[in-house]
Image (cartoon, rainbow, N blue to C red):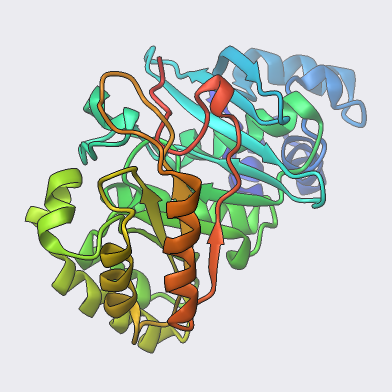
Length: 337
């Protein structure tokens, strides 16, 4: 059976060749999948009944099942999707009251090898990469379920996107060309895979880059992020400067504040110094509790002090709105269970 989710219009045309129909039919099917959120051929009412019956015998549209769906009190929706091999990932739809945007937080891998101390996904370990079509299927599943168009995509779900580089780039191309989502509305978050950051800088079409930093010194970062032993913070800084100078693009620094670990005044001052000559914005994330760790959320007064010091250094600083914590859909909480 041919899976139609994730196919380009040209690929659909090729698939339809044995049916001896016009290329216009391929365009109709493409629109039903990507713009009209169809999940079955019966919904494609502008195709002949005979063609729809023939397609049912040789093709399917979705290929991932919604194993579980949870809705947060704030409107965030978490989907547990099961792929054909039985592996599951989580993807999250975030909505904000004062914005028209619908943001899909997608996973790029089943599990994750990075094992960051404050992240639930890493506790699961790495299982496998997702294909580009499996990544796209997460967005299409949301659209089919809600009958609404996803406007923004962030690669901040399960996995390290830059360790699945080729499939993630193919997925970004599909998001742009098939779902008409612009590069500025696609964000890839990485914990700092230096060679791939440089590769990304060389591309003509690239997403917004976000860096999961979470500490301003190598010593502190090693305690919570094992990746630091391979790609240290000094070399990461060089790669980030190369990226901003090569592209002219501003990057986002993601920093999870963990009570008593990385949220004190001295650490804030060190972070401000580290980022001083880097073209970036800073997004502070309040630690979200996960199973079997001893971390705690920072005090409100420590959050304000930390943010004030960074802002005083001349950087734009935001505190990420907490979304979906009541259904374990917030940053660091995805596990695919």
